[in-house]
Length: 255
Length: 294
Image (cartoon, rainbow over all chains, first blue to last red; front, top):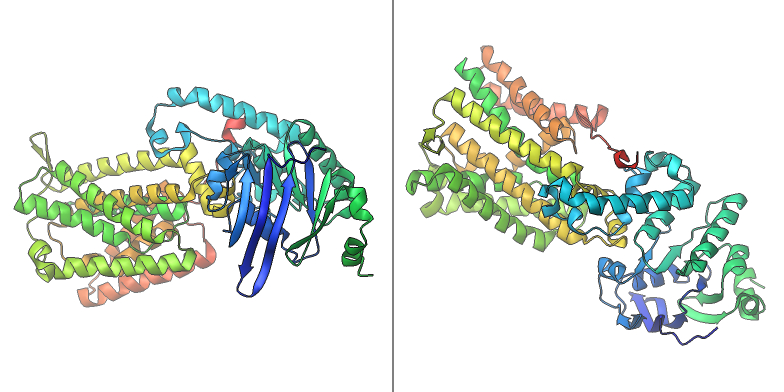
């Protein structure tokens, strides 16, 4: 794989909370069209790194470059408009809204979502609405959620809620997707479905950066794995190389 | 009969005020206790411009809305990044500041002396004089406010507001500019409250700062909660119930000094009962789930 880092790279990124160095001089690259996983024990700084990349936290130092654009100090919505979107470990779904609305809201809105759009005649907005509805339908079909489109998200199973969060992510039309623990709490069967879903997205041209604790799934689907411990990157490489890395094995197995 | 018509007007005025607060509290989850301040801005704009400068009522409405919009923009810009309880405290502080301006800027507001003899609205050579005409006028304004609020609620813009209410970070994560949405709806809410304030001033024909206190803000918040947070029709029902129930006391031989505290106790008790037994209010919010997917 050509790892020139022109798509996405992080250079010397650091973030401390008081005396705690959550992320320390992290440097890595993600190649376009790849599935890269970020692994590490609890408290290693993985989610903090996601928060820094997606603009929910501001780095103390370092750079984040996405297709040549500096992301540090950009707001989350600005980063989404550049083509990057994320999910949350806690999902962060709009629980009182329907499955349809959750996905529908993820689609970029122009006039229709402005205050002025409220008072524009519906006929003017109709064409824009139609294409957005069509796209929502496509995503729900792709995820097998169409039958549940009208259900309130709070009433869905955990597995379906995970799918909705991925649907909402896809709706943003971002080409770089950050997924925070998508496999946690899923059954073996659901994990298999998730794996094929994620590989399918990569084959459709998406680039994925993934955090997960399910080593089997991570090693199975990743093109590249980055290992984080106490905020520092301690190893990176292809899954087989990571599995053979003694320090990684020691951290994970404690031997 | 005249008294009954007056109560109808009062319900309509408070319906407008409750709808205005429902936009920020119910739709967007911005819990504010400063609505009486914006009501006061509208009321004073109308009272001053009508009594001292002979403005047309609709011009005073526009001035009041512009003033409330500007002030709310400043407040929103300064405070809407605060979360939950911190924002409530900030809005409380703002309410106190505005109240003190009404009370102490005597050259403009006449302070504690208040402004008397506020005339009825006139439009296109027609004066809404008399209780019946004024009641019809306030009901007309209420209908317009209901239409606006419903349209906001059902629009994609309204859906984004509800998403922000559910989870601000998640809304930002899908590209929504949360600050811009919160500031815009907060301004609309303040502008509608100023309309309610102007209607109130012309209904009572006298205003002083003691109407626009934190008590009034909490009363309007109670109307939102009891009517149904997030449901604009609930706002009208809430206003109708809470305005009319205490009015019943007038038909009994209860002295004013006793009736007023009884009214306060009644409001407090209703708030507790509703929050405990029916937290979603008389008319709960309707989730129009996936109406478009069919």
